[in-house]
Length: 118
Image 1 (tube, rainbow, N blue to C red):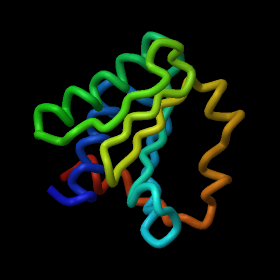
Image 2: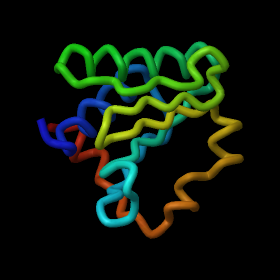
Image 3: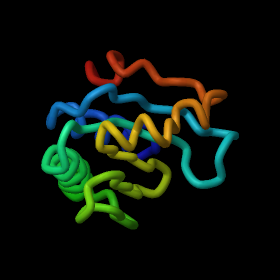
């Protein structure tokens, strides 16, 4: 499975749990850490956990190794490391504070509507 397919699985999983403002940044050539960052937020700790759990469960269903899951208990910023794709699931307050979209502003954004229709 390629990194775009993994990104698609993560985006769809986040959308299934009604994550807000889901974006996917194409990090190719910009980061040595991952090829895609999926960034989204939930409005409560329970929703953040539900989104992160859904991403993990869908990855498991597709045989994608979850290398790391950090921040789940606090549910303020959960990082789901899927290798070439890293999902950042924020609580809405933390997302505004860290503003990864601005930090990685030179990264192209994938069209989420196209991703969700795949």
